[in-house]
Length: 171
Image 1 (tube, rainbow, N blue to C red):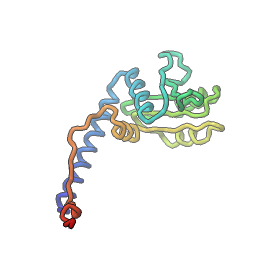
Image 2: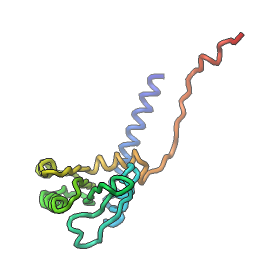
Image 3: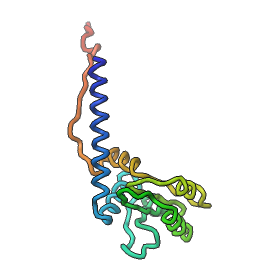
Image 4: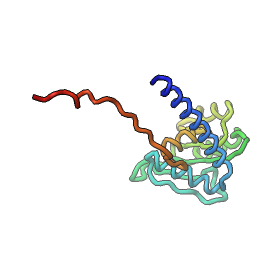
C-alpha cells in the first residue's frame, strides 16, 4: 500500500511539474492583451472585485485596476509583464512605483511570467505608504492552477477506506 502511494505521489508530482512548464510556456506566447485579461480573470477568481484594463498606450505604468471590495472603496493597481526570458528590471519597477505614488491608491501588484531581481524586490519593499506585491512566473502558475485558470480537471481519484461502523450490529 505504501509503495503505491509513493508511486502515485511521484507520478502526480511529475505530472504537476509538466503542467506548470506547459502553462508557463503558453502564457509566454499569448498576446500581451490576452495576458492582461488572464491576470484580471485570476484576480477575480481570487475573490477580488471586478477588474478593468487601462487603455493600451500611455497607461501611465498601470495595466489594470481591481476593485478590492464590492463597493469599489479600495483599488489595486496592476502591472503585468509577459516576458519569455527577460527579468523585470529596476526601471519598470520605478515606473510602476511612480504611477502608484502619484495616486491615492495604496496597493499594487506587479505580475510577470519571468522573475524579479533583488534590486527590484528591495525597491518594492521600500515604497513609503504603499504596498507592492510581486508575483513571479512560478507563483503565477501556482495561483492559476489553484484557481483553475487555463487548466481543466482531467481525472479525479477516489480512495476508499473500510467503514468500521457499517459492520457493527445494532440490536
